Amino acid sequence: MSDPGAPIYRTMREIAEDERPRERLLTHGPERMSEADLVAIVLGSGNRGENVLDFARRIIEGAGGLAGLARSDGLAMQRIRGLGPARAAQLAAAIELGRRVQQLDPDARPSLTTPEAVFALLAGRFVGKSKEQLYVLGVDARGRLIGAPQPIGGGVNAITIRPSEIFREAIVLEATSVILVHNHPSGDPRPSPQDVATTARLIAAAKLLDIGVLDHVILGHGRWVSMKREGYAFGDRDVFE
Image (tube, rainbow, N blue to C red):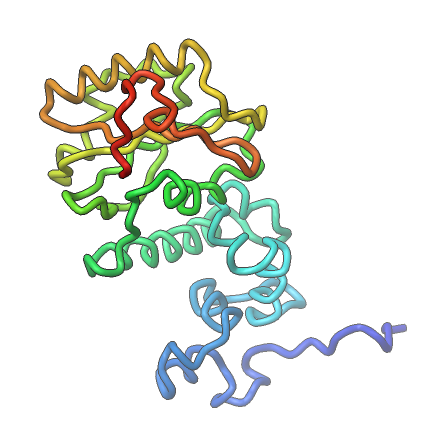
C-alpha cells in the first residue's frame, strides 16, 4: 500500500515541456532559473524513482544550501545519496567554472588588501577540514585576486614541496605578490614557531623569484591571525595600511 503522504513521483517526460529546466533555460535564459533548475541541468538525469529536479533539490538541501554546495569538493558531494563520482565531478567542475568566470572582469575580482578580506574569501573552504591546507593567493598591483584559489599539498607544517612549486602558479599568472593562507584545524590561529620559521623561508624564496609576500594569514574557527600585522616573520611594518 502506498504512503498517501509521500510525494508524487513524475518522470521528466511526464512534466510539461515548458516546465522542464533545459527547455526553460533556452526559452527564458539562465537568470530566470532557480538553483535547483540549474543543478538539474548540470546533472542531466535523476535516479530510480526520483526525477532530476527532485534530485537537485535534495542535493542542495543535503549540502546545506547553495553556499554549502559551493564549499563542497567532489568527495564531500559523494556523501549525498545517489551522487556518484561522475556526477559529483560534473557539479564540482560547474562550480569551479563559476568561480573562474568571476576572475575575468578585473572589477569583479575580490580585493584582498586586508586580512579580513582574505578571511571572508577562504574561511568557508576550511569548514570541517581535519588537515591543514596551504593556499598561495596571487594578487595584482592593486591587491586583487588573480586566478582561482587552489590548495597546495598539505599545510605549512607538512610542506615538503619545493618553493618553486609553491610559487609556480603565481609565476604563471604573473602575479606581482602573493598572500599565504593556511588553516589550523585545532581552531586556534596563533602561529607556531614552525609557522614562523617556514614563513621566513618562503619570504626569502619568493624574493629570489621577484615575488612579494604581502602576508601570511592563519585561519581558525571563526578567527584569524595576520602574521604581517602581528609582526611574525615580517617585521613591524604593516603592508595593509
